[in-house]
Amino acid sequence: MPTVSICIPTYKRPELLKLAVESCLAQTFTDFEIVIGDDSPDSQSAETIRALRAPQPIRYFRNSPRAGQARNVNQLFVAAQGEFLVLLHDDDLLLPNALEALIKPLQQNPDLIASFGKQLVINNEGDVLYAESESLNRKYYRTDQTANRVQRSAWAALVQQLPCDGYMARSAAARATLYRDEPEVGQACDADFGYRLMAQGDFFFLGEFTSAYRITPDSISSSGLRIHLSNLYFILKARAVPGDLEHVRRARLQELAPPAVNGCLLSAARSKALSILFGPYYPWTREPVKGSIQLGLVFLPRLVSGIFLK
Image 1: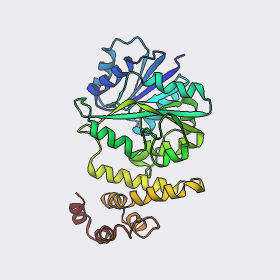
Image 2: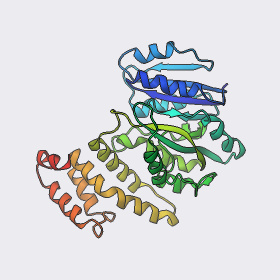
Image 3: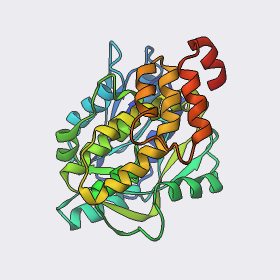
């Protein structure tokens, strides 16, 4: 059995999938398998994988009908044969040191359930965007001040220090958590998984780059991002956290509230928008003008409010 399973869900991106798999095959740590779940309606991804010459085993699953993001990821977690697994989106990359670096803290400390490093941001052509990389890691507390130490998972999940992919987790912990395939989770299923994974144990953050996050033309749209943030708001609002971290959750909810209102309006969930505006987390003191405008948009026809939200 391999020690690590690299799980790659894919959908209609055979060229980027090839680059993702090649980044796995370039690893300095070689005791791994690659497991691919394909939601594509055609055979291009399958043909791309068949054409690769790989010293490590690649197991490929074609989903018909399409499984969707959550079920596709879950089938990969269940199929993973390694003691550890890595989730890698089909448009992202692992850096050559990733597996070797990520596995060490997990092998040295059996109480840890996940490890992760910094992320590079790359454009569609694969060029590194250094300013964006610095900003991304700083935003999610992946800095030298927090590096190379155990992270309290409840805090790390709240601030989304755990990335959406490129992390390594114990396979048993990932299978005990799994993705939720429910309407209220929506596109926030990655973050929701992180919130629930924290119940399994603590994380470890490495102070080195281990993966690359690609910004592509298919990346989430502005409207899609707002709907994603509205899902995230309600997921986080429903989460119970330790009392000493309540101020962290409150600050995050206050940050999410304004874009979450817009997301609710874009998806015609006016009652949810009102629940945020009149709830305890909307930052009226800091955003009185924005709040007043958003309150007005709730009562405009959807077509009109949509023009303002573009």
